[in-house]
Image 1 (cartoon, rainbow, N blue to C red):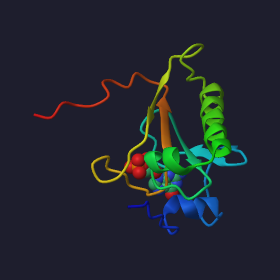
Image 2: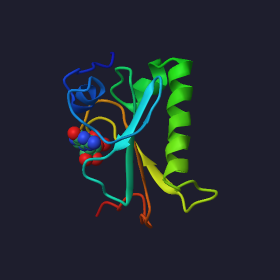
Image 3: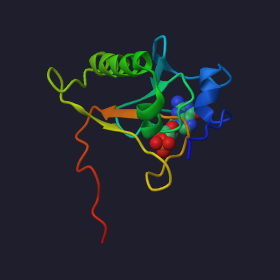
Image 4: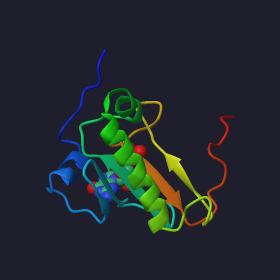
Length: 126
Ligand code: 5GP
């Protein structure tokens, strides 16, 4: 089995400059931008510039440079929006993957959400 990347997904179009975005940080391997439909006062998406479908795909196949760059951008977003868990009130990192994860856009992205109390992580199933 292997991961199949669809280069017509919305985030691929954002990376190619075909769709506008509100960029927060643009680094060598990573782009951070504001979610178009924010679910919290802070809602930023961090994506690798490489063609990775999900977090597990990125974790398995990205280069060390891509992985380090991605995570340093995450830290810079937390600093920028004052949602660090030391100096600020923290935030939530979410990455939906595949069918059960209810992933909408098939390009790996990490949601960074904060700026309010976010409640429990998941509702229990009845
Ligand atoms: P997922 O459900 O795949 O984890 O999340 C996809 C996210 O992408 C959603 O939070 C949605 O609001 C966001 N999104 C979808 N289309 C666009 C877009 O064109 N621009 C931006 N900035 N965010 C988008």
